[in-house]
Image 1: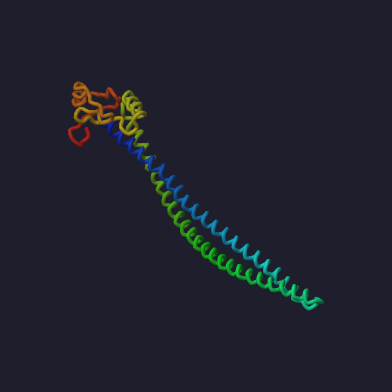
Image 2: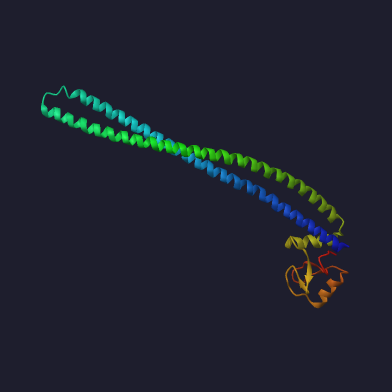
Length: 237
């Protein structure tokens, strides 16, 4: 019966739609996985940049320390060449101030060394996290691409079967079905229950409902144009 063939064709078309949805989901999943990997990569780059800043600060402080130490040594050598007590005391004061500055600079260097060490540990943690996530991404992408290939094969089979099913229908019926399906992709053909179209849920005139129940010709809903059919239970016509 042509109606049964149409119902089977719709089931096949809906099967194809589900395959299409699954195929669309795979690139989205890959992008989500890649997004997580990129985020961890960015965290790793930020930790590396922070480590470099700490190392540069330490290097700059060490250069400043050397400059101050050189200045202190120079002052110490000069204190024995002055000719007056005032000059000697002035140099002594400079040496003391320079010694205090050197001590402060050494404290800052220790702090920068601790900061650099903390930054290095953080960087190593981020690198480990990135390596783990990258390996996980590679495995996940491989599985997703394999699933994509499987779905592609199923899609080819489903479309081939669909074309064969459609070819068995009369051209006028096929055209009606295709036209309705453009507007209602998932349910061009629907049942009636309690004289209500299960596509648009509008109450059908008694005469239309009676004709659908007889099942001797194709009836379309006057409201939504879907093809209607009736069944007593879950067993298809």
